[in-house]
Image 1 (cartoon, one colour):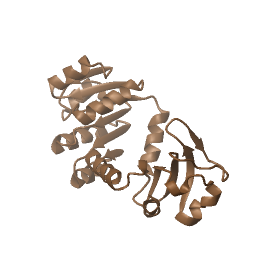
Image 2: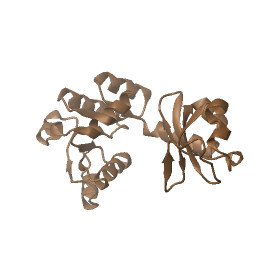
Image 3: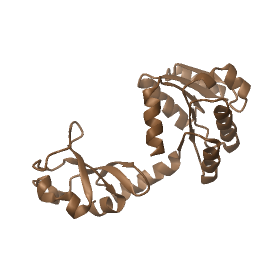
Length: 228
């Protein structure tokens, strides 16, 4: 639950972000944060990428610098920013040195994209607060979409447990949750039911499922897989 505690912590604080590395992943992070009202600074060695992100107005500011140079980071004020995302996962040396610079300077929250298990191990030893493996996660999500089309969305709690949104199986339609006895028969618990527009949280046993409804379930992955 370390990741959950970390994310709750940064949500409670003043939210300023710096994103180092403005490739597709870094740019997507910038856009999403900025469009949700957060102050975002974009950083990259490539002047073209910096110019593009400034022109598209998806950051509060952006600058060109070498993130392996701790003096450059200090002069740019990046060490004073609450959360810094290192999005240069495909460049192992640069990513490691950048993360080390940030941690040694005392940046509160450091998030890093990684591209391999070795990369991940090194950054964990450096004390990086949150590590993301977008290629691996995207591959896992694709595999689930291809083999479990009833799963609308999935949040992995740990290697064994998940929260999922699934389309209610046809055989569940017109039945109440009490009749289905999902915890007894399938080993999963219902958190919510509804559709894409509105959900009912903590539904009562008398609530009846209709065709096309979505169920939000929590349970062991093996039990969820049997259900879908």
